[in-house]
Length: 329
Image (cartoon, rainbow, N blue to C red; front, side, top):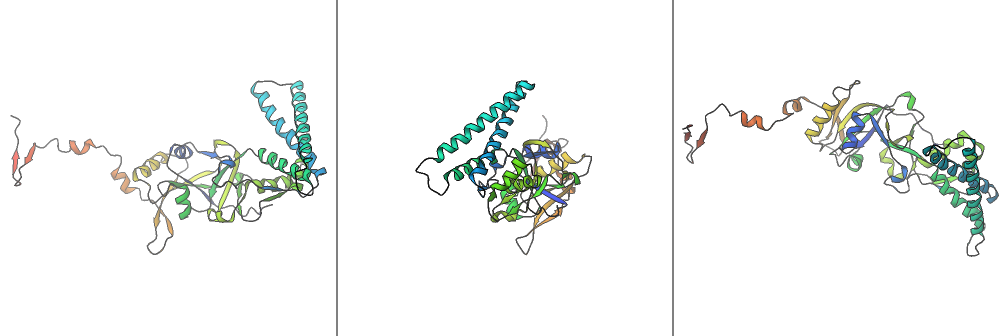
C-alpha cells in the first residue's frame, strides 16, 4: 500500500478559462474524469503479475466476470423498473452462465499448440483477469497539485498562463477520498492481491489494489506533485472548500475582473492572487491581486467617451491648426 503522506493544506486545479471552469467556481462543482481519458496512456493501466497458479486464477476470473455481469444487468433492470426475487435470480443465473462461458473459452484457447510458454492457461487467465480488473474500476478522478507556481503545470494545464488555478482547502471528511500519487516503480499488481480483494473481501488488499490502479504514474510526471480526489464519474458537488483563485501571467484583465466579480458575494470569501515572474530567475511567484485598478477600468461602456463631448460645439481643425467653429445654420 502507498504511504499517503500528510495531506496538504491547499490543493490546486489548473484550468483554462471556459464554461466548465466558471461552473466549477460559481456552482462549486468538480469534474471527476474517467482515468482512460488521461493524457498518459499508461496512467491507471497496471499489468497483472500472475504470481499464483492457473488453478487459483480460474475462480478469480469467474468471480470478476460474475461481478461485472451482475452489475450491468442490475443497472439495466433498474432502468426498466424490473424488481423482485425472480429478477435477482435471473441476474445471478445469467452472471454464472457468462462466467462459465468466459472461463471455458480461455481453457479452450490455452490448448492452441501455437502458444508458447510453460503454462499457456495461466498466461491467458492472467490476461483476461487484467481486462476484467480494469473494467471494474468505474471511479472518477479529480487531478490536483500541491503548488500553484509550477511553470510546467501552467504551460500544460493552465492554457499557457492564459487560464487560472483554483485553490482548495482539504476538510477532514475528505481524508479517505483525497490520495497522493506515487511516481516510479513497477506497473505490476500481484494476482494474489486481487484474489484477496475479490474472493476474501480483504479491505487492506482492496486499498492496495486501488492504489496500484489509480495512484501510480511514471517518474517523469513527478513535477506535478499530484493528489487525486476519488469519487463517482462526471460533474459532482465539491467536497473541497474553494479558498483562492490564482491568475496566470497572460490571463486577460477582463477575465480576471469577471471572475473576481462573480465570486465577490460568495458566502465564504475567496482570496485572489496573480502569478508574477522573478527578475533574476525562471521561478514564478504567487502574489496578492490588487483589484483597485480593475475597479477603475471596468466595466466599460464605449459610448461614454463619445457622450463626454456632447456639450461642446462641433469644431473642425484646419491643416494649419486653426480652429473653425461650425454653426448649426
